[in-house]
Amino acid sequence: MLAIPARRFGPVTYLAKFVRDPIICGVLILILATQLTSTALPNWLGAPNSPGFPWVNVLAGAVAAALVIALTLLPKGTLLRRGAVLAAVIAGTVVYALLAPTNFAAVGENLGFTVPKPFPFGFAVNGELVLVFFITLFPAVAESIATYDIVAGWGGQELSGQRVAQGVFGEVLGSTVRAVFGGMSTLAYPDNIGLLRVTKVGSRYVTLATGIILLVLGGLGPFDRLLQAIPLPVLAAAGTVLFGVLFASAIDVLSGVHWSRDNLMLVGFPFITAIGGLFVPAATLKAMPPVVQLVLGQPLILGTVLLVVLKLAFGLRRS
Image (cartoon, rainbow, N blue to C red; front, side, top):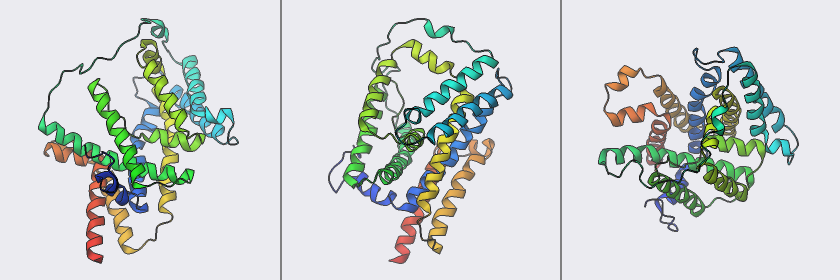
């Protein structure tokens, strides 16, 4: 309801004006990219009990990462550049399958189509969970707005508050529909932002066609099992390249900032504190109330809260 794109007076329109400040936008993306490092190299190396640990994981992942880098350096418009990540994942998977036990036999089983059912887990409303999800989704919406701003800059597009509100409304409406069918929220994911930058493909028609294809394939059991069969180290290695592009993009945004004393504090304190939440001992978090655990354990939530508070405080001090 808050995301309904009302002209001029919509809450998201006002939030967009705040988040699109280069400092806010840059720090949010910086926090997000840094947070993703916990899923990059650790998943690339894998666990000691995984079949390919350590050298097969490292080698297959290195092939995937090297191909993503090499193919994305090809001239703009080249077919291989557009399919760089897909080609890299396929090549990395082949290398992994040649060197470590890999089972693709289950892919051809149960060829039927699964039709989504509404409320597969039942329906209920819990006030505490509503609050938790709202706290979780608010920073995610701010992150989406920040990524909109970066992508608009890459394409030389004018990004009005109304366009931002329409984009956020589309995301939360999609999340609502997915929740009805037992799915997860559909928010702007950083992998896709990095993918857009390295492939230079940003057409809305490509995005629409991809969505339709995934809706159809999502009901096919073999497609799900094929995705599950792709080695995690290969996906993590390819993702590491994309996360690196996202991190560099945040640095690019912050490079145009005038580094006054206020701005140094506004960037440094929220970033260090938010990332520090990743290293709070589990026993310490467990002793906190659930909402505090959520804020401290999610750098993007903590960083967004600190950025909002400091930005407003500095604004009041100047006035």
